[in-house]
Image 1 (cartoon, rainbow, N blue to C red):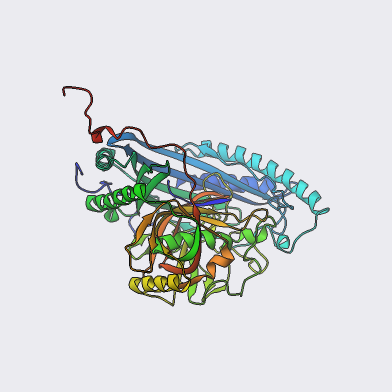
Image 2: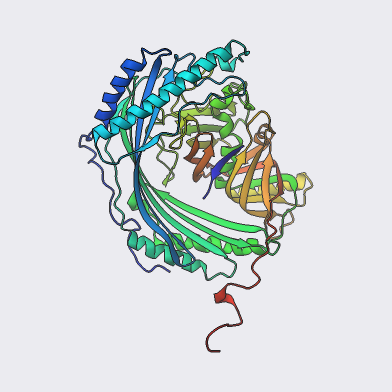
Length: 575
């Protein structure tokens, strides 16, 4: 199972949220090389010379140091929860034994060979000798593990039958890239942020329906230094800012009601102002209050309209994970699309790309943007579906038959091994309708199918999907705001307790039209290689058939007493 998109997870001051500017070299100034690059290169040369002559030989060594500076400020219900800054460096060493065709990462049957460890923390001081000692010890550990794994693999291959997918090489040959970009950093005054999280969460106390509220500001500057025995030399940095708003309530029957909203930006000039934040809070509060009182929707199958953000998550779950290259290679995966290249899998008016070179779409920053993936391959635009026909996959350096090279989608969380992952999944349509036309078409479908109502899916928290062969090839998407739309003209009715379920091949063929305006969903996607930032963008979609089930509900009831400030009977003090 892949928990694919994970969401969280009265201003008292004015001015920018992150008042101090970020620091980097001027655009036309040559970037300064980190002194760590010299230490990495010296140890790489020494290690490769010796380990390539061992039995079995090391044919590839890669070193990555990730320097992360992070600021987090959180508040809850009008008070400060935490406020802090942190900086750390993480060293990851990759050693591959054997050769590009067969190495220590090869998977035999349903057994994945253990490969290396999660890396180790190294000092933040630019002390070359201290860093070299850490690299030396980590390289020795990784080589020994890789050598042992390769011996087991060679023995196992003699007695196990290989599939066609398994005969693809274990590692692709890629052109080595050299890029020395400016190092980045952030300087954040936390005091204004602390005041803001108090103010933003205090405003939520005005609603008796809100049991809990949390607001979090986060700022991160991350610099990556990467060298490999193939000749890769990279130095680049990236800055991200995020503001998350979360509130929670409970329906009378105990069902948890959550509302969430986030702002993402990379430039301080794009940060949200108080007006935008309070507008988002007002919408969240209104929706939560409505959902607490709303009826539960019964399981049903029928026509549905998904707004752009909801449709973006739908495509991420239903299509995106099944287009990740490593899933076509693994015999334990469902391999939904592995034999369908050149076949039509979507209506002919839909095309899908994964473009990790895109920084923005419609003025909104895309979380899935990066310069190089975690295997040192430049970000690229990849056509996955062209007018309904499957053209390819998101590829890491684990090649497939017919797809021998990476297209820059080898990604991972720190401490995990890169695999092919989504970045910026962009859905485009050549059959667009206005919002009014889509709604009219939805009502037409409801009437033609004889259904009492259809559904309008307005917002989605995330979802998960099953891709393994031993599991049902199913997905589940978790809506936050759902309305029943009636064919007789009655006002839309807000309902709760709705989960979208289905199987991918059937669900994708039911799309009959789309809207004319793409919307962006930014989130964090969890899979085999950990949590990575992703974006998905899509216009609204109209589907002729969507199955929904009842959401899991808690048995806990709401608190017996109302919140203190909302109790009609005053207690304590002078009456």
